[in-house]
Structure formats: C-alpha cells, structure tokens
Length: 327
Ligand SMILES: Cc1cc2nc3c(=O)[nH]c(=O)nc-3n(C[C@H](O)[C@H](O)[C@H](O)COP(=O)(O)OP(=O)(O)OC[C@H]3O[C@@H](n4cnc5c(N)ncnc54)[C@H](O)[C@@H]3O)c2cc1C
Image 1 (cartoon, rainbow, N blue to C red):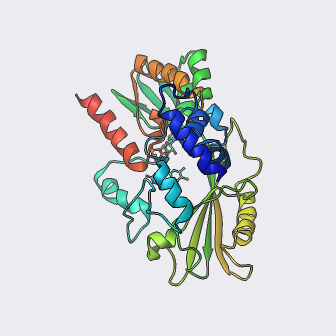
Image 2: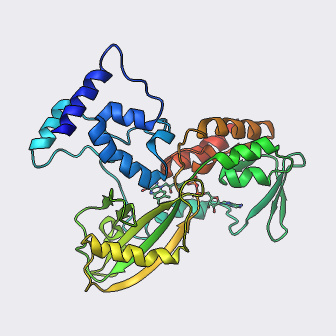
Image 3: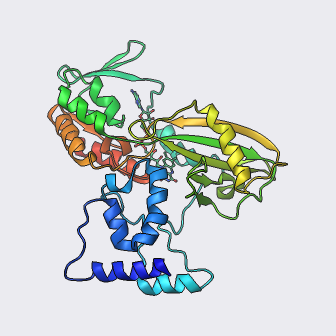
C-alpha cells in the first residue's frame, strides 16, 4: 500500500508545474517510482550491479533499460497474478551451434586478423604502435578499441591531467562463474536477477536454454555474474575463489540441489565489464576524447566510446570509426 501511495504522489509531482529536480540516478528513481519502490528495489539492485550508490550515478545510460509504468499498470500489477512482459528485450536470436561467437565466424574468415598482440605503447608523432614481444607497426591511421584507462597511459607524451582523467573512468570487473550440471530443468527463465545483498552473484543466465547444443544431452548450465570494481568494490579474492560461494548460493536459492551432480565449474575474470556512469564520467571522458582527437587516434567499441553498448552497438561503433577515417 505504501508503495502505491508513494508511486501515485511521485507521479503527481512529476506531472506538476513544479517537478522535482533530477541531478542523479537516485533522484530519477525516486521521482519515477516513489520512495518505497525506489529504495527497496532498483537502488538495492543498482548498487549490487554498478558497485556504487544511485546518488553517485548519472542518468545518461538509462535509455529503455528501466520501464516506467503508469498508475493504472501499478494498480493492476498489485492485484493481478501476472502482467504482460515489459522487459526492454522482447525477443532475441542465438546461434544453435557454436555459442554467441558463431555470429562472428564469417567475419573471421573474411578478415586478416593478427591475434595475440598486446599493445604496449603508441607514438602518435612517428605513428608507430609497439607490441609486447618487440613487434612495432607503423600506421597511417589508428582505430583503438582498447579500454581508455589502458590506452591513454600507453601514448607517448600523454599529459598527466589526461592520464589522471582516464584513471577516473570507472568500470565494473565481472567474475563470470560457469557451472555445468547433470540435469536441464534448473530454471524456467533464461535470466534471473538477485536483489538480496547476501547472495554472492548478482545475475544468472542459463546458456542451455538459449541453445541445448551448448551442453551435453540432458545437462544444464548456469552462468553467474559477480560484480566488483577497482574504484568502489575491489575484488577481494582470486577469480577461482568465487566458484564455491557461487555454488553454495545456487543451492541456498534453490536453483541447485545439494544432490546435483556438478560436472564442470570454472571462473573467468572480465577486467573491463560494464562502464559505471558515475558523476565523474562525463567530464573525464571529454578530456580523454579531446586528447585522442588532438593526437589523431580514433576510438571505438564499448571501452573506446566508454558507453553502455551492447555487442551490436560496439560493432557498429567500429564500423562508423572506419567509415569516418575513409571519408
Ligand atoms: C557479463 C556481461 C554480459 C554481457 N551480456 C551481453 C548480452 O547479453 N548482449 C549484448 O549484446 N552484450 C552483452 N554484453 C556487452 C558486450 O560484451 C560488449 O558490448 C562487447 O563485448 C564490446 O565489444 P568491444 O569490441 O567494444 O570490446 P571488447 O570485446 O572488450 O574488446 C576490447 C579488446 O581490447 C583488448 N585489449 C585490451 N588491452 C589491450 C592491449 N593492451 N593490447 C591489445 N588488445 C587489448 C581486449 O583483450 C579486448 O579483446 C555483456 C557484457 C558483460 C561484461
């Protein structure tokens, strides 16, 4: 009841002649949903996923990600057993064979890829990219998808204020724990979100529900996402030490049973996972992108744009960067 009362007051305030000021994500949540819902649900989940408080975040990443219902929908939702699906992803495709990477197979075949090269420095005056192991490549034009906090300190002569700005760009670090199980009826849903602060993982997905060919016949799989960040919640253990807490909490939440056969478990750390839209991001990004423009380095991708892009958007970002240099 409290939740509906708050929602209705917030909706009235938002549509009044004197709407509340919105200076950060918390303001937006309170204004959109009312205090009770905002503080119990998205503020709690947001802190788990983004690793920082909503009051420390901007709103320029939201796009369609958070659905804002009207009062009619909230009232119907409170009394009816289930509502229509309003998730922003209402359909998707997934390759039957080869997992998500199979989408890129055709591009691999059509491209001259030189993998296993780690960039260690860029000389923007002589236009030389230096890789570990001693390879140096002269370039005419350079497009980089390397994360900006990694790229900027590698550019010869990068001013200290620009290096400092790149270090202020915050990103979550995700330890992905993959678990293979001896049965396939472990979840009715492809994704599950966990709001409880004492659960080790934040989000789960179930690859065998995307394609049964991702697992042996009759088996199931869980991918658990556990979030940290250097800036706000440093990873306090090795990636492998995340495996057991994930398995324990899969049992505690009833997704797995103590008697389930664990056929496989591994942890993969993703150092750059989701860009954190904290209140320092916009100014720091302007400084960094301004400098890259000055030295003739073009950026692209999720960690070059420093955006919350999905794979397809990261792909288009690379295409647009190439088009810009070709015209
Ligand atoms: C847990 C998680 C779940 C996600 N789920 C989805 C989803 O369901 N759907 C979706 O569309 N998107 C999803 N995304 C987002 C998607 O993964 C990204 O948008 C996409 O991978 C970005 O591609 P990119 O090429 O810009 O960056 P990346 O794929 O990260 O490419 C950057 C590359 O730079 C390389 N690099 C770094 N330093 C150096 C160096 N010094 N020298 C050379 N190379 C270097 C890295 O190794 C990396 O290969 C998810 C992301 C995460 C973290």
